[in-house]
Picture 1: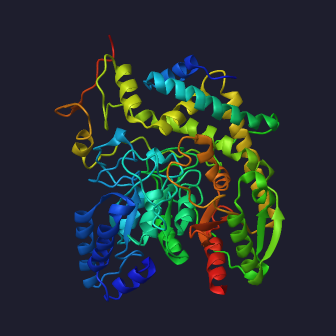
Picture 2 (picture 1 turned 90 degrees about the vertical axis):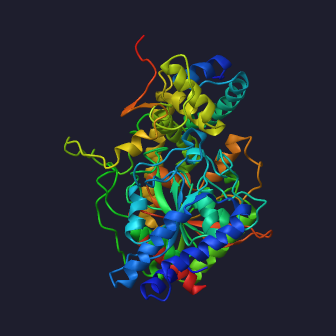
Picture 3 (picture 1 turned 120 degrees about the vertical axis):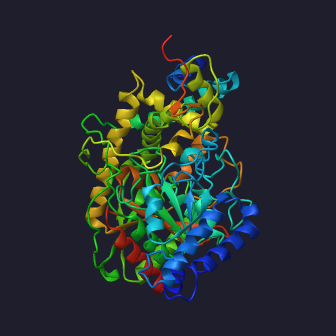
Length: 95
Length: 470
């Protein structure tokens, strides 16, 4: 399958990436190359093979759902691009 | 430069102060890092304060840590409270870590001195450190060449003698490949042995922290300080290490026949260096045998699907809201698009899109699920090979270091430099790159030793005996 400019626009939107016109051209070429190279995977039949997501097959680990105090709240808030007193300011979410 | 092992001995015996050891390193950095560019930042003040504290502890006669007074560089994707961390990206310019990564904390608890943060490919994506948004790092052996990547700054720091130990992270070879290019030791421990809490996630099912060192003994020392269970990392394993006594005379060394074939791009010089390692192992009494890893030909493609898919999810957190760069936009989604579009570099954008595509509706089965099935086959290949072999020997990379700009325009050519290191991550094994000679033009060549999970001590033992015999 050929990756066209509109495919790149669709993937970029899924990825929340704003691309320039030049980038769209370049990435459609490069992604097309990479994805056609990946088609070599189809040379092997895996219909009877189970997928591996985690190599050591560990069980999920959970801790008790009890909140702990972070020692330096200010250090987190200082990294916020926009802040108002002890809140992180975000753009309007609901129109 | 003193090795880490020598430094610890002298500091413990109060024949050397941690402060003096640090100042020696700072001086070498001052003299040469302008040319090499291994560090994005040298933590001069905090390192001096730390070294002074180590010296007070030593003078008080208290029991000293495993890394007493050893200056250690950390890759710039590890959190260190109160210090900057950028992951080599513009999107984290100005970010200051509110907490410390467990791996870094373990070094500090063992009385190491954190000397600075090392350059890297943006978000650990790359094989030459050319994808750093900040600077190039030169190979200390020959500055016309790349140091490898993605942990290129860490490898260069150890190779240039800036510090005896540096931490890197390895998702598909990002410790072992630069170690080979720079002529040092680079270890990727078994998946789950070193905590990733505080390591900026790239591909969580593959990422692992490990050390660079200039001797195998130092690599082992750093590893023993790092490996421990951490409740803050849900993939961290609680189990004792396998301390297997071994005899070189009964050691079976597996040589994957597919890795020595033409299709891997293995250069004659690297192939010749491998022959020398084989004959050294043979004369030490080890038995060479052929093993087959037939599905390794699919490893590279499967790796790029799996790692990019995981990255597309992990890097979703960089959205311009809670930390890092933020670009104003007309809506929340517009803030996301502009912040990410303008602050991620080309390789990161390429991989996020590749991952989003592999996971998207209609393509999930053909790409992501297919790659995970291939991953099973690759693991099964290794399970089979380790039935007859105790260790597996391969080249670390098909070539020696390449020149700047040589592969940056062609992502696929760059990806090929990790062809021998990637299967280890997919299978969750431990692997180490150790120096094994030089090419005609003086560039280092690395060999890779792979062992079953939790068999790091066997790996260290084999290399030590090999070097002892030489």
